[in-house]
Length: 252
Image (tube, rainbow, N blue to C red; front, side, top):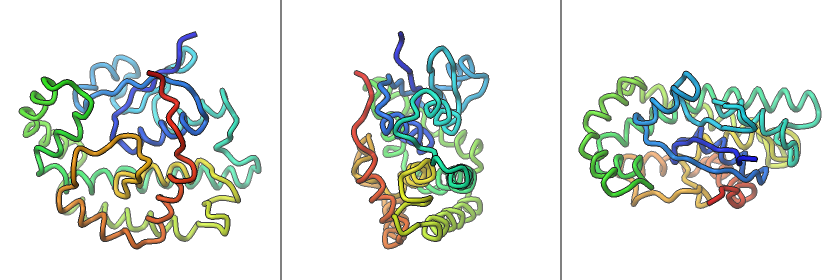
């Protein structure tokens, strides 16, 4: 039987959410990394939409990180990411939805607003893992790619300010929901914790994140990260990664 294949972007936080679920469940899989923009024809052919991650599992093509986790939970329920208690499960999935909608797109916009002016760093980050020729071509095309990304994600000074406020509100929600156990729901790690921590990871940059950055952060990004580093929610993300990110289940 063919192993599952995860089509991904290396540095996307929604892709990290799906990767972490696969690794947490110790689910052997193959990863295929694509370049943003250049991924569209392949993903449209697979799914009739353009977003990643996409998981090929048991003959099914599953798009969207939430649906991927639902499928993994059915196929391999242990270790569980959904609480057994129905009320706790509802709370965990409600929090998952909140972070997916109210954090994920906004952190992406806020970070890209700071990152995109730094052509060399941004192109190197996005093209990590590709051939030297691909990296050179991607760097040469990046001024155009930058404009497309700004239009596609609605990135401008006003929208970035709104998105930073949304990120602050997501940190507030994490800190408000934290239980004495250190988790967001009940007394064990769940999809709520995985989602919040994965979606905050591009700002927190935990040491356990599976891909190294291409160098020191550009100053505006480093300043943004430093501005939230004292928050309880920031330290909680580091703790979730320390406790639960574990080792990769990726197959060579």
